[in-house]
Picture 1 (cartoon, rainbow, N blue to C red):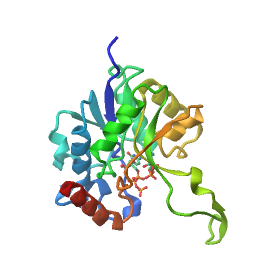
Picture 2 (cartoon, rainbow, N blue to C red):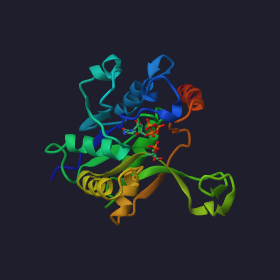
Picture 3 (cartoon, protein in one colour):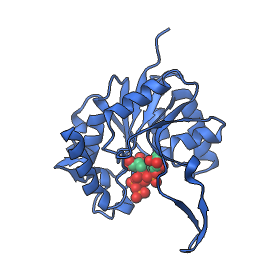
Length: 236
Ligand SMILES: Nc1ccn([C@@H]2O[C@H](COP(=O)(O)OP(=O)(O)OP(=O)(O)O)[C@@H](O)[C@H]2O)c(=O)n1
Ligand SMILES: C[C@](O)(CO)[C@H](O)COP(=O)(O)O
């Protein structure tokens, strides 16, 4: 019986509205390189992968100019309306090639500071797990619940059991396809990560403590922060 393989899915079909830039944030530059190229190069350097699928926006005009477009290990495919749709599209792109018990690691293209040690620890910690899980970190700020459409605090949440979900998130191909298919049908737009789709169908994903510098580039100030983090990582 061959051991399960590891596949990469890197959703890159967003438009980066919160970044308020003239182009999607995955094509902004970090030290002169596309965010997308930095993320993909770091992921692909993290060990052996059976394949890497990158869902892209149907109007993506920047991909051909990326370094990743010339990398035979990377397969683009059409993304979807929401992140979960893009991930599901990438999984369907792998139909017939990925085995049901193969592992799939899903990582946001907007998280270029992913550290190889975190990917290695996620893969090794969950390699024999029945469900899978995700990189995460305990919440360190006090968390307030605020009334919808208001600035009034309703309640302070007990943060002792709260964790911030990062990516990669790692689940078995067959389980993840089934969970996402149900999630996108029953709760369109509500599934914001792979773990929540798995939870909705009764799984209990495990958290694996990850570095808090695994930031997601989301708002304008995140770009300079990502450059700083990458420089600090390079300095060792
Ligand atoms: N339909 C979508 C929406 C998002 N993503 C990807 O999912 C990741 C996390 O999403 P987010 O940070 O929300 O990116 P955007 O959707 O581009 O940002 P915004 O919500 O500000 O538009 C990103 O790598 C993004 O490219 C995707 O593949 N397909
Ligand atoms: C998947 C994720 O990065 C985990 O924190 C997050 O849910 C993505 O959310 P977004 O609104 O699509 O950026």
